[in-house]
Image (cartoon, rainbow, N blue to C red; front, side, top):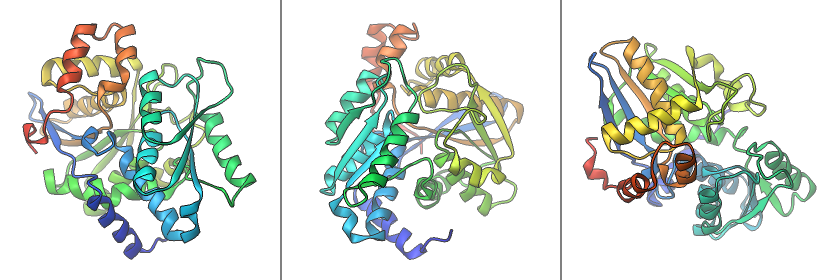
Length: 332
């Protein structure tokens, strides 16, 4: 489906006027001459890479039909997308309802409630972290009461990946030029497919490497390709993917620890997964430039890191204090 570039351009301009985007890049140099360039997405206004997709999805719905502003924007999620939608809708004077599984991290639930969204837990076992039921119920709400609800459905909404074509891709190009590889793990597929497509169109030599969870262990925000049930964005764009790297929860959390100890940055588990995959790629291809993203900071995962023995409580306190250092402290 083709989209009106002038409308997308207007949405992009509003995106930046709201103070979103323009996140810094953190370069990590390896001994073999390769560099991993990580876009630090927790410097977005509402704390994560999902600010981009959420803004484009909400604004495209408003552009599509002026009556949508009177509806309740609903989404099934377990984290950053809900936080972004809640905050963006609040600032735009729109109502939002976020459906989440009961196993969502407590820190995330708190952030969701602070966003101004109505937060609804699905009727499932307390340990459930899968968003499958939340997604299904959000879509059912729109079908049952289309005059009252509009479901954004991030897993199948083209604005999810187009947000990266119009914002993070161009930003990264200005910051580091054209990378040799774009390496990002799959969640909804927005980041990897949007940035991958942007740079593939800039140069046919760019290789797109998609990371995935191993399908056995749980990494917040990261999924396994074969087991993912909602992968419309990924399947629509899978032709741009050159190869796939698999990461386990242990490898992701070890990478979170490494980033804190060796580089002084405190990130979420999905960032650890992205770094693990990008670093593996960098080690295999000396002298390469690898672009990845760190979707959010580690501040919402204190309980996870503490219970997994990744950090002590005193370490977590120190890391949280410096998690949001000024952008000027980073090189790009």
